[in-house]
Image (cartoon, rainbow, N blue to C red; front, side, top):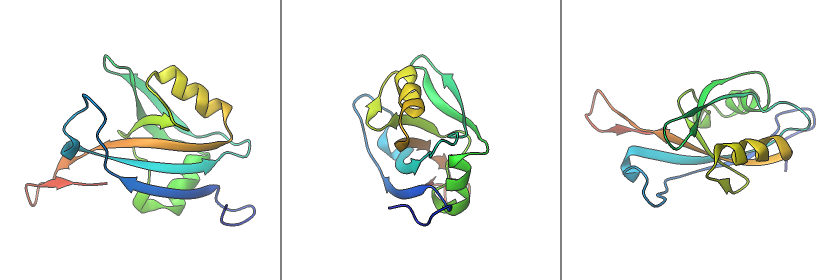
Length: 127
């Protein structure tokens, strides 16, 4: 259930690592899920299609539902460079994911963050 009337539109988040078919080495990324309700407000994600598979890369978070999410959940914030990989279970074609984001009021959004080398330990850094 939403946290409070007039407050954040976030519902829940789960962080999990996953591996789907011929994807990058699973140790090179982390997938996480964000659930929001738009209530007529914009999602607030700037998206760009990149690569041969036209993945949806986050180019910025503007005013809207996702900015509220980031303010309320900074440890699970959606960042520039993350990839939007699903919306309400719709995966694959970028245009299908975008259409679902526009269509639905309640969105369960799947994101992927590529890990970067941790300059201090030589290991991988998570989200």
